[in-house]
Image (tube, rainbow, N blue to C red):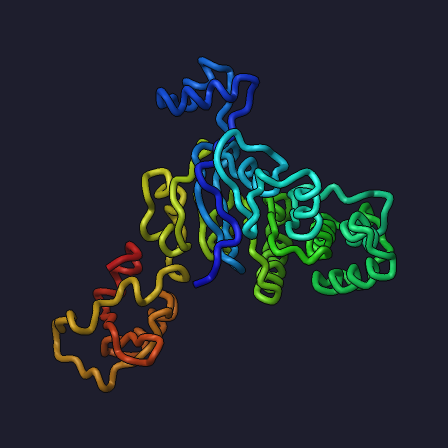
Length: 349
């Protein structure tokens, strides 16, 4: 089983001078966010947040402005101190780290990419990328070597000696990604890194990020307010509202099994054709009762991970049912026209 690299357990953040008293009142009296604001003048930033992220996973956290997603991600490297709860990164209790230990984690193990990159305007692209290594005391030769490799990864070869104000917004964002990769961190924290970009540039950077992620196997927490982006990038998605996590699941689970009306409103209108798979809509072969004679031997076969879009393509080529196979090639289920139509309509049979 893949290990958990990041774990949050009951994390709260309350902003205000009476945060401790507000936290005690929440625990003792069950106060909600409006009551905490009225009685203590405090704002609940995140409330009882718990989740874990596996090694190599892209874990997307999605929510509207003010939902607490950016506040949450800044807890992972302790840019924000929690009011209560436990945070573990790579087996380290983040709350128990000394100042020196925390600096070491940030310099060597955790990279962060912000929406606004805050590149150093007086430094070249090469020197911006190599800045984390300079902080670690690496010699210039090593910094330049690593910078060159990272810039090649993000397709910025030839721009090493340019300054940030000579680059487009998308190129600056790629410099920021290269800078985050320069220290070869185990964990990447990405706070709406592409949200300020034009749609075409944004999609190109999403493609580039996914390719890099597949190559480098970085454990990533990716913050976004865009469900399409979360679905496209994430292995799993957490949806936040008012500082709380409402639902965690795969893109397929979020779209086909929304936890409540809030999530349902988010996913309404999202195409299911690339998100729902044969294993979700098939009838187990032992339970299938044909409504008309079926020749299983001549029926087309496809893997249980085939999406609705491809199932439709298959269905247009045959009058037979579609046999669904397992990872070992054995027949495990059946998709007929009625099942397929139900899947298209609602994502579930």
